[in-house]
Image (tube, rainbow, N blue to C red; front, side, top):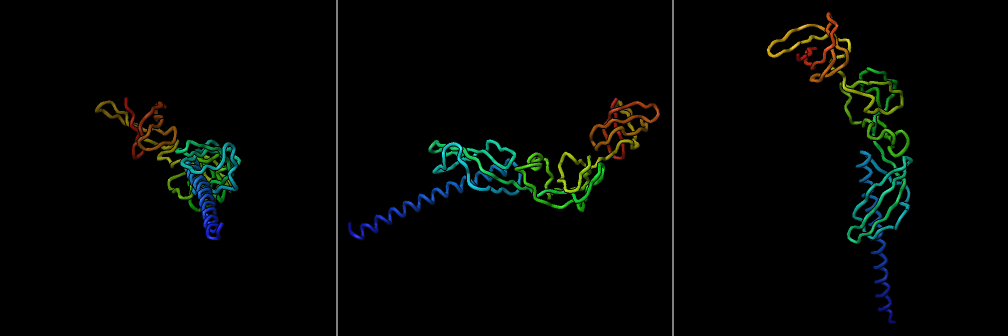
Length: 232
């Protein structure tokens, strides 16, 4: 075999190996890219890190990847997923360790029930949603960019604890024990009396009140000026 032919053959072999390797890397890179996107969508997080290599549980790296579907996670930082090549009809299953980070509000001091929330009571801190309390409360954690105006705590929040939606509420427009003016409405006729709110409430929402004199409990719609409209 002449020298030119040998060089041509080696060149073809080299190019074939090069493109095969490049194609394989492209496939795994696409798997990682699609998997990160699915994790972000599932966890509503800001950043995803895949740790180590994928462990293939069924099948192997596909030559081409069109779709990645998350099956489940083990709450210990490992996620189980499938990859599919729709054209060839092939699929594989794998798992990989990961971290899913969210920037959350974390208390710098103890906050008590009924206390108005303020920016100086919190710092922004990254929380990993793949493990521990981050995983347990994922979807309920208040992100760092959420405004705290007109919000209050409904339970004690300890120093170092991240803020969760279930621990806060909008500041009520009226509180239990506040004085109210009760308008008893029947057609075009309105009778007015005074009473007290039996629960905290919000404008345009129903609230229980009690007339001050007769001690009669009523259910009405809260309006501005601490007026409660009660249809008869």
